[in-house]
Length: 434
Image (cartoon, rainbow, N blue to C red; front, side, top):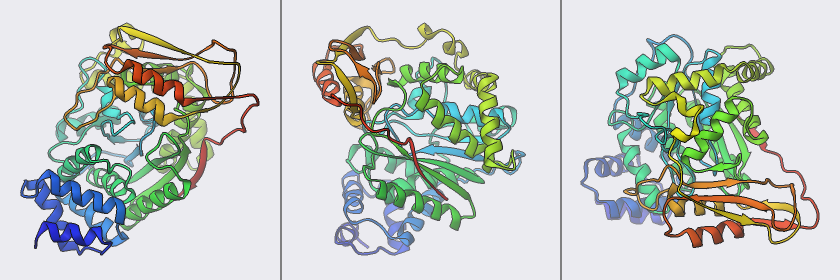
């Protein structure tokens, strides 16, 4: 078969057979299909979509491209948490330690920055010395000792997805629902999970802008999990304004530390606790979800989630003192304040603009080869609904080089909407699927 014929058929909305999808995945994995044809296929999927049968085949082939990790030797139910990506979304670094402190085994297979959203691995690697490239044996050993380990895509785990994941970011196909579903579930199914909690973001700062599409993605991933005998719960959550105040890798690690010490932003704390509770419940640590919520709250208040993250940072080669001394993290050399042009109420903060500005000054990637500047980003001083005076600081832009600062500052200014009346309250958790 010819790659160009398969691209043509998918472009025209035809369903590809299991053999044809296998040919495409294996061909790109072994280098016989070049980047430009794989990009064309991804774009065809972006516009034409995929059937459940195609998505199942794509997911299965991604898993089969590497080794499946057998975690059966580790006692306990294995539960992971995954977000579809948002601006200021650092909940994995809060919910996972809380769940692990409660007794859940949490094998975290995490990703890197995609488009204007940050990646968990990029945030962790802003901690000096932190190593995400664990071997499978190291991964298992750490799960046994600490119940929590953060790992990136390894050559062993769904390597085909690793290649496609980077290409999606560079080919403007990140937002494709079938590609998101397949990518997420391939990583999870390759690592011997029993259950999965998903945070499906929707709104201006998410890849998915409409709640109906977020619901479709959640249902698609839950369906893949169900057909593979995995328990999957998905929360659909609002991403119209950034989550918390910090956007940018080291800046978000600082906010994670504050939140795990019960001094973080209300929205970030609430969502992290709910995600941790869902993980605890699926891990069968408690009999009811309400008991799981109480246990997650306890692990936050008694500091055991905070200590768990410190232990994991140390185990993976990082300096746990960064959670107490922020000067040990990468710090920006320049700062620009963005002021309110008039008095009023903050009616909107466009999360996508904030994410784009942060990425523009070095916190994200434009191509898969780009390196990230861990020090830079944006810290908000206000949230939607807050009253401000003329000249009040709306946010601060932190940078290490002058390039693109003016353009980034303009984007940030454009992100804020100020009105004479307070906006209606928006729910943070919009619905639950599965």
